Image 1: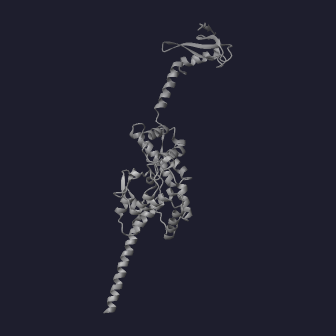
Image 2: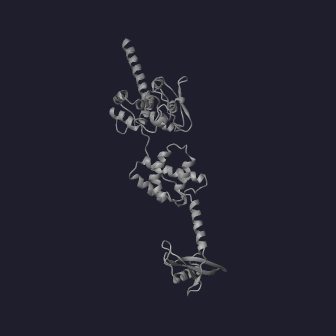
Image 3: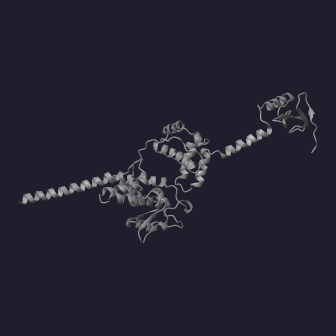
Length: 380
C-alpha cells in the first residue's frame, strides 16, 4: 500500500493527502484535521474534495467546532451510534413485545385472529412505542376511532389484546406497566339465538337434502351436543368413547378438558359418519384440523330461510340449550355442565325459558286440580 504524504494548508491543523476519486480514479484531495481535546492529540479524516465537497476552510470550521465541543470526534460519534443502536435493540416496543408474546404463548387460542387485530389496529398506532410512552388519551383515541367502523365487541377484543401484550411483558420484566386502566367499550354480547318450530323444521329438511356430509353432520353435532364450533373442529376419534358413551372436549373455552355425555342420537350419527385416515372427525384439507366451513353451513342455513344474523353453528348451540331449558326438566347446574360453561353466569341467559316451562307445568297442575274439584262438586 503506497504511503501518502500529508500536505499542509493555510489553516493550522488542516492537512490533506492526494488520493484517487471513487469511480473515476482521478486525483482527489482527502482532508484531515489534528487537534487536542482534554490534553489528548486527535487526528481524523473529515472528508473528500469532490465526494464530500470538502475544502480547507470547511475542514478548519469542523476542527474549531470539535475543539469547542460543538461536534463529537469521529471515535465519539461512532461510539454514540453504537450506544444508540444498542439502546434501540434493548427497547421493548409493542412490536417487539408482540413477537415475544407469540413466540412464548403459542398455546393461546385465536392467535391467528389476534395477529390480524394487532396488524390492522394496534401496530399502525403503537407498534414503535414503548409501554412507558402509552397514555390514556392515545388509547381512548384508538377506541373512539375503531368504534366508527367496527362493532363494540370487536373493539373490545382489540383493546383486550393490547392489555394482554402489555401485562405479559410487564410480568416478564420486559417493560413497564401502563399507569392507567384501558377502558373497554360496553358490549351487550349475551345473544341468545333460537328458532321457531317452523324454522327448525325447515333447517332439518335442508340438512337432510344437502350433499356435504361434513357440513350437515357438523350442524347436527352442534344441535345434538351443544358443542362449540372450535371444539367440533378439534374433535378427534380418540376423544369419542362409544363404549362408555362420552365425548372428551380437549382444550375447551373454559380451560380444562371436559367430558359430556354421548347421547344415542349423536352416537348413531358418529357411527355412520365417514371415517378417513385423518385423526379428526371433521378433517380439513389434507386431513389436518379444519379451520372453516362457513360457506357450506351458510348454504344450508340460507336454504332453510333462516335469519341472516343466525349463526349456523354457534346458533345451534343456543338452540340446544334453549330446548333443554324450556323443557323444564333440566336444572341450571346440569345445563351449565352440558354447555361446559366455566361460570353459571353464562348459563343464566336460559333461566327464563326454564322458569316459563315450570310456570306452565304449575298452571297445568292448577287446571287439573280445578277440573277435578269441579267434577267433585257436580257429582255431589
